[in-house]
Length: 108
Image 1 (cartoon, rainbow, N blue to C red):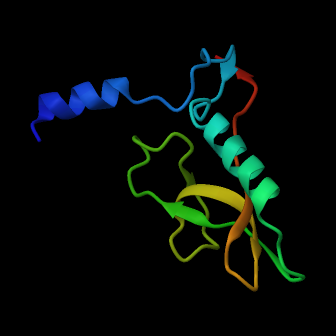
Image 2 (cartoon, rainbow, N blue to C red):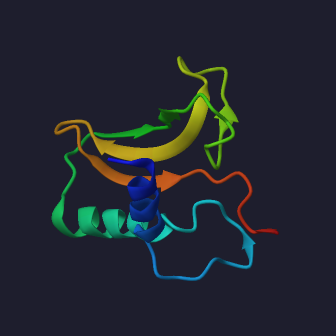
């Protein structure tokens, strides 16, 4: 695939139809997708009696391309984005996820 074709496809991909918020939120485009995932899991998945709370990292080495890049020295891979998840320990499925936004509701 050529670079120009890739750029055309990327310019058409959208996760939401909402306008950008008035406050600084670098993940405003994917918040609807995360909410839809959580609603779908709540409607169709029942966790077992053992639930695990976790703070996984999405590994990201280039802080210029990651919207909420953080350094967390307690993690094996300390660079990237951090999430909060609840998982069913019996099945291994993620039941709920939320993104940690360090600068939400900060005026642009």
